[in-house]
Length: 361
Image 1 (cartoon, one colour):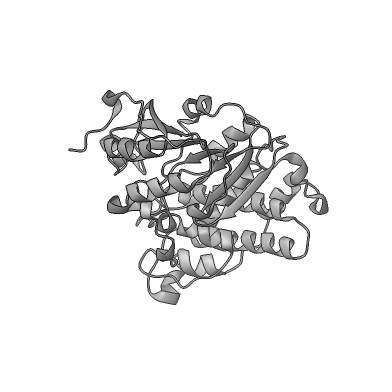
Image 2 (cartoon, helix red, strand yellow):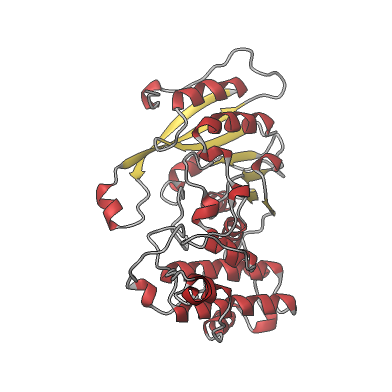
């Protein structure tokens, strides 16, 4: 993964993968909250066709880039992938939106000195993004090649961003890495020959069929991803939104998720599981989430056979060294809901070791 992402399953994927199983003919692995695409990539490695969805364009771009194969990103018009990366690293700086909004130059435009990026890095970032858009508009690169380059740009941004871990706000003092020069790195492309469908939108609108395997990884905490990753979203869209506050947040409240509100999360989850057409649903959850596991067990058992599989513990998300020292571990789980469309279960029959359930107290 090119940058740290809250809730990323990169440290758990080897424990989740055995529960996926082999794909059925023509079926899709549906990653409904795809994030950076770690789980979708693992499904592709098993031969699944993949459908990815998220309400953030930046997330879908990151996930889709993982699934691009060599034939889809040959960059014929520009001499190949390596030469394209070299051209971007040599791009001329532009004093554009990122420079005016997220570097100390913002003081001259709004009276707030934002320190997400140094002025040279912000200007270079504007130049790189402008060049990608220019190539896209004149037909030098196709849509998948553009996706790949923007995702590569996310990685470059993260390496020099003056942040604690997310883009929710900037640090008051410059870190050592933020003073380094921004640059892109190429990645090793895969040889997948699978179908990939992508959507950016409401998870309740996602398509699924009985043979598909749906994977759900909702946020479950109060953190709203649209605000935490607002700069990546702006780079993804290439727009110039009206930003607000010290942090310079783009408008995001229309993307607020019900899963981030304790009072709404369980109802939203139950409704989503009920509306999905898939006969088998995988659901990630952790002890950090604000749904009580016993309540989850009772509610989701109404929709089919419910089993809970402990995946062990991992370190809590650590945005900085101070948080690392104070951090405790998080217990991770994978719930599975299985149902038959021939006959809905008359009596819930959950199968779970209650020793693994977190108390509601």
